[in-house]
Amino acid sequence: MGLSQLIERHRQEVLVRWKDIVRTLSDARHLSEEHLENHVPDLLDWLVVRLRDRDAADVYGSQQLSRVHAFQRVGDDFDLVEVLAELAVLRDVVLGLWAEQPGDITPAEVIQLNRDMDDVVAVCTTEFARQILAKHGASREATQAMGP
Image (cartoon, rainbow, N blue to C red; front, side, top):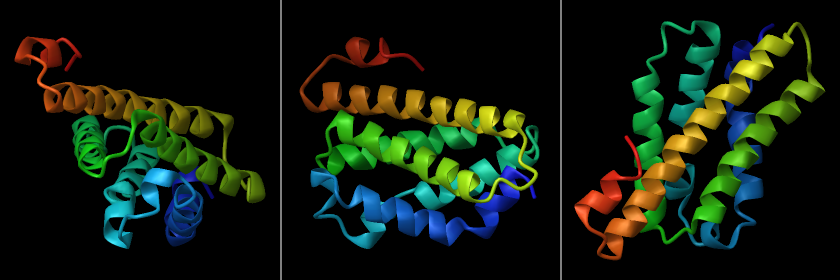
């Protein structure tokens, strides 16, 4: 069983573990179940496809999920540290599951998961910062200077 299959088979368990840990973050305590999950289930689905077939999973899809997640977290009054923490927790939960059930998962799959998660973190961080700047009246040029 590869990493994509492990995530797919244990998707609900990953979400439950992730939510249990993220609920300990102060900004997440007040969120409804729906707002807490946000686009994380979709992100897990994207990771499954991406790990299974690099060409089948559109990178644009993860970028959009990351941007929407950041936008919602700004609206939920999260700070950047907690947005990054919740993404780190997601990575830790998936890697913890792999440690519990290593099976036939190759180091290359784990490296690719880390690269994909790094991309998600980069896009989410950039969009979060852009939204915060805009919320506090930064010019369009300033927010565009954050990157694509």
